[in-house]
Structures are given as structure tokens and as C-alpha cells.
Image 1 (tube, helix red, strand yellow):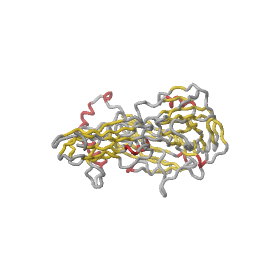
Image 2 (image 1 turned 90 degrees about the vertical axis):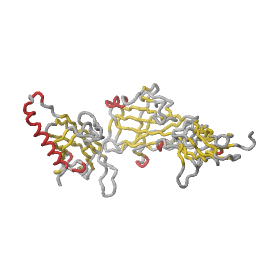
Image 3 (image 1 turned 180 degrees about the horizontal axis):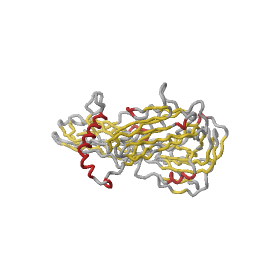
Image 4 (image 1 turned 120 degrees about the vertical axis):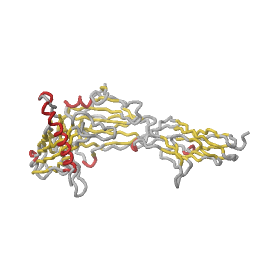
Length: 473
């Protein structure tokens, strides 16, 4: 079978042959410059002496993902097809020779479906096409693992170079350090009896499980809408949440120009206060300590609209020997858990004649005090059912409501409400109902199919829709 690459080469050869005469007549100064292409990937890898394993019998995920970046961005044509900006053989050489005795190198996921030829700690990959930008120029990944010979402080590099006619490549180097600092955070829990409106005095701390110490630590604390930082510290910077972004985060960055040792635990010189609003409920807080040299702090602050704190400075204090089991890579907490919201559904009572079409409003409101955010589910909507009064047909329905024409449906329409739902939210869902038959006291309803956790008043979770109620004249 003729390969796709061979077909492409044939087409290219024919095109070049057709243009050969003209090309010879072009002055040298008008010949195209080589296409500049850069190899991209991480600058460094800290190879843990306590790695997380992959699936049984399978290597873990690659720590190094490589690719190529060419000028421009990939643009589809009128048929949605994205074409390469270069066609012609090129090779990529990945040289990890300096990792001999430092780490084991797995090239099996390099080169995609084509794979690469491997000779010891050197892999050579061949390809033919290059696209604009980076998205379609994936080279694959490299997995590194410590061995019995690996020791904290071992260091090596991976050098990536490439060559091809008509191409000007810029290579890339990945520094590999074994057993560098690895900071793990103390997992926190909500204090007993904590309620919305209280301030959590957070005892933030970390343990360095790496084989080497270091100097320079940055603490990042983030909280969602119901959380705040009531105190500011002189060595912290604060980036408040955009008020229009209900799912956004406020962030504090605190900088410590302190040394830390391998295997040691450190805590703050004072608790870090985190305030909770009266509407807060299952708001999210996360924090991380990272080993960051002082000369990199400015880059972190440039990522947000940070304002300096004005209070006393926080420090780091070495803690007694800490149980490694109490520390985790990702420290986060949802609180307060003690608060309630009051979701309320209301209907209408109307008179209507046979054949008449009337507008019926179903009202929804949250009377608080808490908001309903569902942050962990990414703003998943909540839903309620609407049963139409007998003798009526819906002529129009709100866009957020759909006919429930499937087996097992609990009502005639299922309506959705996006979250987050603010503590004082209200909304109206208007149906157009045609009266096909006049039935005295014809009653439908809007209702939640179940009572949600933290619902403070289930009694108003349903509202009646009544047409031609008895006693009305």
C-alpha cells in the first residue's frame, strides 16, 4: 500500500518540477527565507524521589510534553480544512545521554503514532508536515523515573534539536533535578461549630518531602465569593475577585525569603484569617506553598491585579516533626457547611373562558440567607417541574423549560435554573395556556421533586397554578 507520506512527496515533486524553470530564473535575493520553527516544552523537571505510580504494569504520565511552534496560527479554509505551512522531511533528535545514572528515560510515547528510533538515551523522530502555531505540532511525551542509583541533587539535561531543508530550528533544553524541594500542604478541616459570618483562623503549614532544601517560599491562598481576607500583611499582595464573576476567586500571595530544610515542616507565625459572608455556603478555599526564588516573585505578581498589604509581616516557623500522612499535594476546603437557603416557588390564580389563552407566571425566589453556588459541579443547574392545570394546553413556554415527554417524567415541563443562585435572586417563568375545557378549580403546580440539602424552608418548595378557582366571581 502506498503511504500517505509517499503520496504527499509525489505531489510535491510534481509541483516542484512544474515550477523548476521559473525557480531557476528567480534572483538569489528573492528566494524564500527558511521557515523559523521552535521546539517547545518545559524548562525544567523536578524528579521526585517519591513518585506517584501509574496504572499496574503501565508507566506513569510523561512529565515532559514536547512540540513545535511555527509562525502564525492555524486557520481553516472555507471547508474547515487546516493545511500545513511546510511539507518536507525533517528530524527531531532528543538526547538524554546526560541522564545516565540519574534517571530512567521512557521514549515510548514520543513521536505519536509514528514512534521514534531509539539508541540508548537518544531518540530520533522523523516527520513531514509542520502547521502554523503550536496546536497541531505535537511531538509526544517523555517519562522519567528515579532508579536505585538516583540520589537527591543528581542533575542532567535533555537536549532537543531538529533539522530539515527549508527550516530554521531553535532547539530546547530541559533541566532535570532529582529530589528537589517538594512542598506538601497540611489538609484543613472546618472548626466545630463554625457558621457563616465567622472568621476562620487558618493554621496554614507545609512539609518539604523533597530530598533538598531551598530558599524562597510563596504562599497562595484563594477563596470564592463568600470568602474574604479581612486582614492584610506587609509581605502579602491581594488580587480581589471581579464582582461580575460569580465563580471567580480572590487571591492572596505572601512571599517569604526564608530557607527551608529537606524533610522539615513549617507553619505561619500567625494564623491566616479568612472571613465568611453571611450568605456563604460551601464556598471553596485552597492554598499552596511553592518553592519560588525571590527573583521570580515579580513574574507571579504580574499575573494579576495585586495590591500590597499594609499590616505586619508574616513569618515561617519550623514545626516539630510532622506525620507525612497529614500533608497533601492539593489542600482545599469547602466551608461553611452550616447555613441555609430558602427556595420558593409560586403559581397564579386566574379566571379564563373556554378557548381563551392566558399568561401564567411561575415565580422563583431565593430568600436566603445563603446563596446556592454548586461550585464543585461547575455551575450545574437545578431543576423544577411544572404540571399544567387539567383542561389546558401550553401554547408557549419559557426557553428554560422543555416538554417532559419521556417515560418516568414527574411533570409536564422540566425547567432549569442556572447556578450560582444569589441569596436574593428571583425570576419569573411565563407560560401561555389555552383553556380547552373550563374546569372549576383546575389546579396545576410548580414543584421541586426533592428537598435539597441546606434548604431551610421546604414548605414553600411548591406553588399552585389554579384556573377558575371556586369562590371567585
